[in-house]
Image 1 (cartoon, helix red, strand yellow):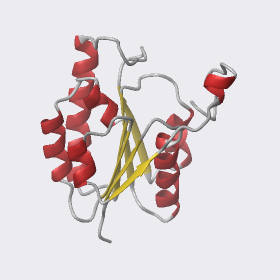
Image 2 (cartoon, helix red, strand yellow):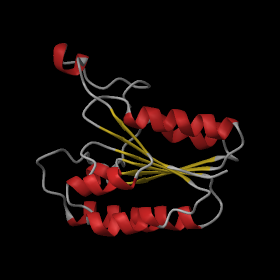
Image 3 (tube, rainbow, N blue to C red):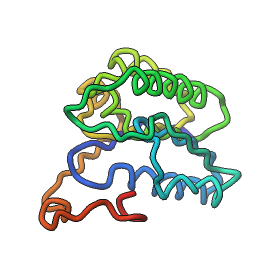
Length: 174
């Protein structure tokens, strides 16, 4: 199979959810999937994917337990976790073990300055032809959009977080 580079961006909900859904679809067809979650070190429902798909899905987090929000200055620990994550993601992508690589929240990691855009772009360009690469996160740089084969922008029209002040719900948003 010839792989492609898919990019999910925008301010609407569903970027990670779309990537996780694609991972499950791939795993159900026997593909091996590696998911690297940048900026995430918290408990998310999808962390048990490896238990449900032990032979096909590997998931790792490259973040600290504290959620980094827009406007906050990243700590040295946040930056080190992101750099280590990029190395792990690159190693997984080039290992020949995986058919699909998902770099969850990579766009935001670059936007917040935890990783250098050019360094990340060089890693993305090394994608082997047979690997499907999926990158998620708000604020995708133009250079990532230009490189991608498929770009989907999630646009928020209405969200209950804003209209009802409803926090993230287990199994739905986290």
